[in-house]
Length: 197
Image 1: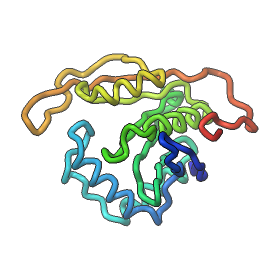
Image 2 (image 1 turned 135 degrees about the vertical axis):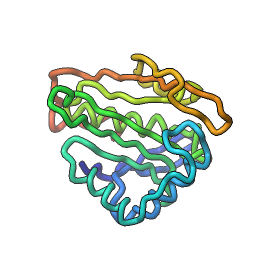
Image 3 (image 1 turned 90 degrees about the horizontal axis):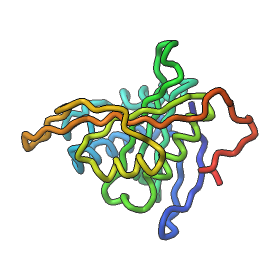
Image 4 (image 1 turned 90 degrees about the vertical axis):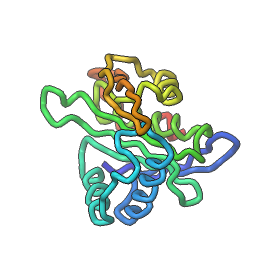
């Protein structure tokens, strides 16, 4: 699913654009992934594990654009990718009301509202598609992210003990969080999501 560009104003008046990445953004998306993996140990991949070619990334982006139930939104500031969120619908019929969310924001761009803007856009879009709930996994030590998710209505549904082994040898649980969306009430096609102003 393609998300058309939306201009937003972040904290301190910073202007940004939220939109689906295009195949032409593949190199920038790979650079973003490499940067964000080097900045934190709280993502599923470790720095250096990313091995996608530009062609692989182009195909990955295209798979989101052509999907009726999955999408990706990147936040661009002065042409640079500052953050990214993806929502992927479950494949099986019994779980078709559920979607998985992943989000990352580059360290230099944190604390200016990008995480909130991306989450609001993702949740509004997921609701408009008709999902009943959105789910994510977060490393138990990532307190900043957990606070952000709670502010946006996510609650803990369980945890997997020692799910992640960090580079220093310590272990962290994976906390499974869910955000329930409206059930059985499809929004009007004319409705404007709140994140679009």
